[in-house]
Length: 364
Ligand code: ADP
Ligand code: MG
Image (tube, rainbow, N blue to C red; front, side, top):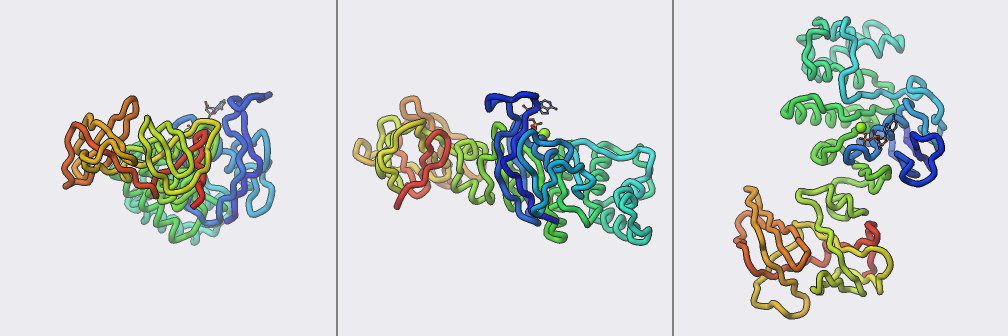
């Protein structure tokens, strides 16, 4: 196993890239710890598969280097990088039995037959394949085949990392949950570096210790699920993580105050006279509250009209409107809320400031 270091690495599928839009991956500089469970999260087309294929060696980046444990592997092929990869769709041998499929990566490495047998039995047990070991793979359903693909990815215990590219796409929702928990368990048991690609935030947040959020060919934040929730480094992380996502509101900021659509609110920190670029305030629906309407019109209040309330069982989501600004507010289950005039309270400690989409650190 090894630390993975992406050094000034970028990739374009075009022969002569010039502008940033020509790049599927813009310049990346990141270190992924040995033994970490990482999820690569982002919408379709943001560069997840490109990045995974560069780590595995299926693709050579057009710029920069990939280092494993300090060694430059940029030009090494997959076999020499000692990587296991599981793809979105099954990659198995139909003419072989389940047992032969699982044994294949081990046989290839010249492992002793008795050791192969023991390891295959262990993986089969873990994935509920024991009963099917002697079935021919060709007769199995797509999701059973994908589980065998997962097994083939997990069977070697001498790999630098295991990479998964949306591996549960063809698996039914209930089994998805079970398999995801199994992968997490395996990670804890064996300590492989795992990189798991998904566009589904629930999948990413339940699997990973660290989530790598990608947007438009860039890694915009690497953080624990808590960090992504509490301090999104980029407005994209704010609204992509969370349900609904963070409110991102156009604002002006001066010192410890922000003005949003004519309403002034307190900020937890001092931002000085913040100018230049696009200034926005970010606050999650969880950190907003409705206060009494009676105190409206004074300083530090934010008058809104509640235009709709959606009951989601465990909580409600109210839509608050002020001029052309719309704000989602999460209201706890037993708190009354109704459409009409209200005043909104921002939690200053949870109110963040963004300049050109990037988080700005204030001073205390
Ligand atoms: P994701 O896995 O996040 O959906 P990809 O890494 O597959 O994203 O794609 C990133 C970008 O690179 C997209 O704009 C996609 O169209 C482009 N791309 C991916 N593969 C190729 C390829 N083989 N040739 C040219 N462009 C590609
Ligand atoms: Mg992809």
